[in-house]
Length: 184
Image (cartoon, rainbow, N blue to C red; front, side, top):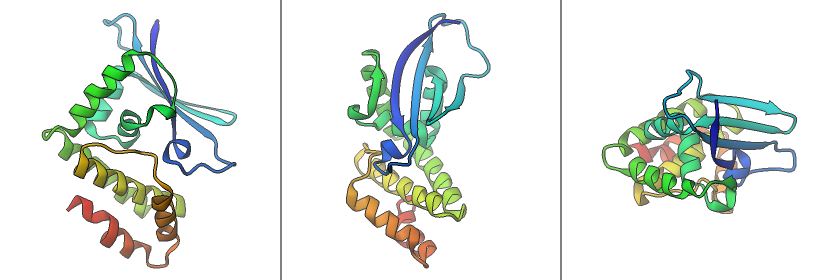
């Protein structure tokens, strides 16, 4: 099965702007099949090797996940080019097409609903890291809803704000009053 490489991008804490010296390198890789008639059942896999955690996914499955609003895929579609490790020139057109589809009035409500459910799941996870991810998803959803774009790499003010909120004793109240309102 021959594959055509499309993109390898940073992901996880390196994409979000929250990496520490102890962070592993998360990468997200998209490929297409050279034979367009060939489609194996499994078109996405995760491989963890030493200090790199790599997700590899077919373009077909990636598109499907984008339109469902799976945060990992939407983040890659809106990631700044500085976060791309390697890419085929075709990625520019694919990315532009996907951004238009994701933010289209027929698709955006589904995308935001997936973000809402995922943020709630992370918030209920209980630990600091998951809670901070819940807040990050709310920030990204608000930007997507209000501007039709988003930058998955948070600025330092947002990182500081969600870090303080994730450490707060009353963090669930903060989640619902300051962040979750984007979904109302």
